[in-house]
Image (spheres, rainbow, N blue to C red):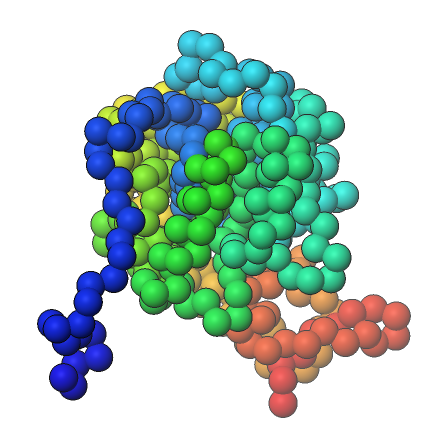
Length: 336
């Protein structure tokens, strides 16, 4: 036969190992955070960059390190437990540790994996080794994109499925929860289609949360909405406040906010940001049209025009402006 997946019917059948359902002992679902994050499997938290995903995940780590309850829970379901935090975007000494201290975490129970010069990936066995070493009940992978192997494609199911199945097996065998953080795309559409990469990423896990801002909320309040749940009914959206003055605070629940509400707000914000960057590009082109300008002066003039430093930096990058030092100060000029 020409079909490589077919076989000759006169060939002997292979031995096959099977298990009868009556031999399997049914087990209840156990939870790290009911009904959002089950134990023994992988969950995903999606959100836009800068909206507080990392802060939120560290608040979860703080709660379990102290054995505290979380919003919507009457009692803590777990005693104080250890946590593995894998963060590929923020330095521990300057960002992660100060945040944990501000949140009130028991830092003796929070651990990172030292890569020893060999980059960690989702399939790395050191993740399981670290979980077993500390008997950790929660592992945070932040963000997913920082721990992809070179041959991994987030847009291909054949890449996504094996990696997530491996982590699911690790979670099941170590009786722990694994929470993967991921960015969301800027496009429009339903929430389940807006995770970065293949929709198979969302389809492969039992629970998915979406974090972000929503219409009607204060500018420093974020919503965390439950988008998918295979093990229980969807949980009620919970809120937290994040600002420089008061830090992180839980803000109760809001059952009117859905994942699609967060995605719509995110898409509108992306369109607004695009417009602001275009305005900043025009500002810089006009300002630098006749030559070099001190960077401090450019920033001050931009502020007078209502252009934020972040937007100005994005416009500067878009124009390819390379700062250079002139007589002891930095200056900007349009590329020749």
